[in-house]
Length: 286
Length: 97
Image 1 (cartoon, rainbow over the protein chains, first blue to last red):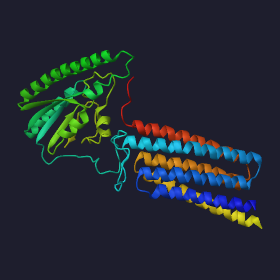
Image 2: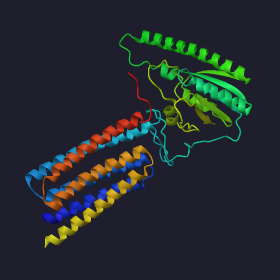
Image 3: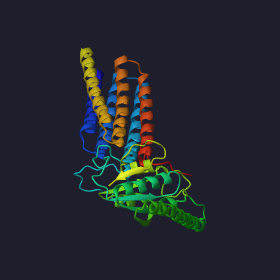
Image 4: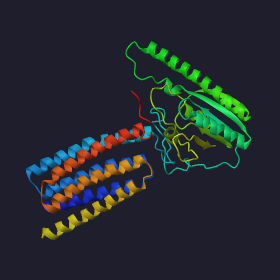
């Protein structure tokens, strides 16, 4: 009798585990898979453990099995919830047929670099470069970027546009302030922004001089805000964007090291050239 | 009387479990995104608990129940850690102090 019960529970448990795994394999998006894995998985595993307790019936086994099942029932919902939340916040794409996203507006979604999506493709070369845009940051590697951009504009006989961005998103994130410190945090933000403006002005002078010497027409845009959408806006067809490999638009004032390459890759802006040397500028084609 | 039936039942559930592990493993290989793999890994941890349970039945050694408990604990911790990584984004630069 016990053997029969045991076998019944074992097969039911293993069958439910298989159903969960099939769900993982067949369901179309991350959230559905998560739902299959955590629900059916816990029930399947729990039934199988009950079958084990029937097979080796003793007080110790029953207690241990009960503890194991209780533990699974306590932890798996938490794990599933955490995973789903993390996936949603990270911006894992929803299935195309999803009709309602109840978390829309409740949680901020990120920009998930989805390896299989066609959005992230490496553009090698334009048929024709109509404009060279130089991202004006301050810091190491900027001289190489200026030289490269001016040479590029000259070689293709096109205008050079300087795009000076002040990354206020990073600069205004001054970290936790103590109670009563908000006034000083505001001051700090203003000081940082003013410092960034000064550095932009210095770099722009250098670029202008280089452009006049090479006989390239030079125009300037100045923007403040999050650099990624600004860069993305500028990347229209025929534009070659030149950035420094080491200097970001915080102009060295943010107090942390920001690698432009990883920043761009993270936001699905694909550079054309592989890194060859440390100082070689990043080139992105629109 | 019960011997062959029991053995057959254990064999069947073992095969089902193995097929489930194959499915989860295939999803880990396929991806396509990191979170998908983490979910499949989570399920694989659960299947590991089930496999430890099967080991009790096959070997007759009750000690494997403790192993099942341990695997469940480790799987939970791993999933929580991975969830943290996913939420913060793995390639984003580390936040300064």
